Length: 503
Image (cartoon, rainbow, N blue to C red; front, top):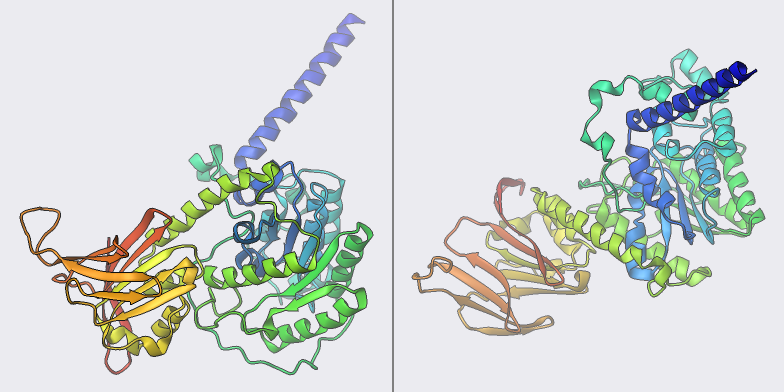
């Protein structure tokens, strides 16, 4: 009898040790993208007031940290790459296992589609790996892979399974997918990095789009799988007494996508929920605010969308400003880290277009010394400057400096200010320039100048170097970056050719 007990105890210990070993091995071997994206969500014990769910349009187009700083909104972004509405439904269901928000904001892209998830199964891992194994995750896995539309498309070759096998066990126990990653294991697997964007993802590039608007009377056909799951989301939130806001984010949408957006008006009216169709708004600049031609917003566009959503949420729902709530004081620390991330993005940028885009709607002060005025002949560059708050008709061959403060609310163009000591009274204060003519100090050489606003130094430059455009960026009392771009502008095409970005 004692021998049987010892054997039983040994078996139990062996099973426990095996489970513990496999659990830790699974944590080590899995790709960390999902954990990094959503770690802040699971680390927070307090409820979130707003959840954003949907596609990468949401991930790249809504910034919870900006909503916090401007409106005190506690939110999290659960947008995922190419998430179809059935996937979004199950992401929402899993998230609601861990928090009870006042509002769920649902992205309605892919409403006209019938497949349940992305053809890239790695996108599913990004959306679900971070969620712990429970009955809701099991239900999600069984439902999403019960997808006859995708199965038929894969069988007849109209869709290609191009990254990894679509298996239920792969989502429920991802070691079965990641067990072969031994050669990829690095320091980041033992100590994963942390994102302070609360699920969002800044995409840094600038593309120029050309939207072609169709009639609002044109709408998609009814009865799609996407519509079915959108209705389920709305009904489930209403059953839980959670408010719903439907959105369709701005981008150069195709006719099919515009028909989706137009049909959402009918669904919103039927359920008595609010809907913001950004395609019908003149909010973003399609010359400056797109990351790519297909769909996504860059940080300039995302800040505009986030600001509009913040004002709308505060005005239309029972959402409190939590900036003075001690329970959420740790968000201030996260916001400081978020600002450091934005500063790194600025410092690491070596493209004039991307640099100007990154400065838009950010809480920084900007001083520009523009010596090669040919850049004003390039319409795109003028658009990017206009996106910072500069009026294009103020830019002339006499423009010497541009000064922008308070996130673009105060922007002045300063002409003919190269004479030493001459003062110019502007909206941002008294601006003066002084040249150093004493070469005895090695830090102050002949040719250097210093620009002052109300007696405070805001720019140091050298008129004798080959700089075409110098930009200094400060955040509060800290100098974030000083960059000197050197470029030429083709007189016929007005194309700007960058030869150097010196720091």
